[in-house]
Image 1: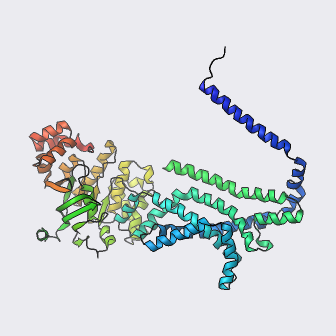
Image 2: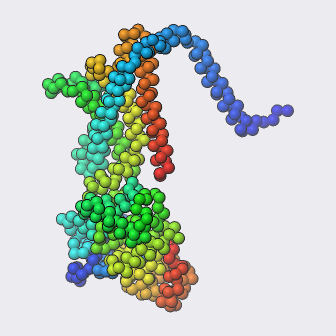
Image 3: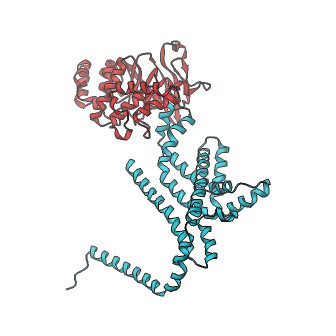
Length: 263
Length: 281
């Protein structure tokens, strides 16, 4: 005697059907793929071992170095831009808005090309490679970080500024000692996110025309790909990116949990 | 009106013709009043009567639309005045405490001493510890605000203001955000402060406190001072109908009844129990 399905039973059936479709699709893909050719292209152990230790000592280290350079510069510039954006002086605000809209609106790739080739042409100076990397990654990152930091500053209750001003602090002093430290606590998770994005964007430095010792992960992998006639370096480079970004993602989650608890 | 206020040197606060509008909304419509040195003045009145705005005009957290405010001989409404300098001499306590959550209790007390008064670290810490002990929280110097109860936070906030050696203290409904059982400790600290001769301007709903501690009570309504006088006069035997209506709403119905017949009796009889919890209107 067929009884009408209870709501819970029906929900379970629907979910079961969804899983079934997903598994079937994955199985079809797995069957259709040529695993032997994939295996020889991506999982060549001898090629993989040949990449070490250089892929770590040079490429991984360079990726981290470029990222931190760009992040440090971008964070400092981003803070300045955020403060300008919130300033009571209109030209500061216009300047900050223009900057942010510009660098947020164009691809990072173009910034790299412009800096890598335009600056030496314009000013007849050959910038140090590290400086160019720092500038190009930082200029773009700053635009995003400025908006993040601005949101953080605005999230600090007005009473904090009032309390600081009541104690005789100037507007600037209250900002530096009271508001900005609290703002950074608030925006720590999104800033860590920005660090992950920058880690990947650092691969764009290949546009600057680097020498072998300056290669970072993506570029190193691409170079090795040509040398070994194998896709294995791409896989290894990708895994090494994850070695950097997964712990950062973990950090973001922990920071978010901490913020949620504190509020 | 300004001619009458020639005792500027005497008074801690001198307010003349003070007006404040937020857009079209006129919150203060011409306030004249003063607080003498060492005097404790409580400002009472219904919500929206402009009490808090008046207080905030004294240390220029709100910019007056018109009028003159003089604090300890310095006209704060003078555009040339260095307001940061004036504010150092005025302690302010907020309804919502506004402790700095990223700093410990001790650091809350030392940061302005160091950054504003340029006291060195040991001196600032010593003064901070003295003030924390004074509000009964000597053992909490390492605690962060989030680890303290509301009453403790407000006492730290009072200590933070006191650490700057202010000449007068402003209190903006200091107990309104507190659970009833935590109000007593904060009021005890304020009572002790008044006894030590601190000049205090207190916006409050604590009628018990006003009656017991205030030298003078100011009743405000609709952006004007309706009446002022000793607590016995204003709370005990109000002359104006609006004051009477407000008081009967704020005080316990029973207490209000007693008030109607004999002011002093009511004051003594209710201080220990009823109105100390205060009631927000």
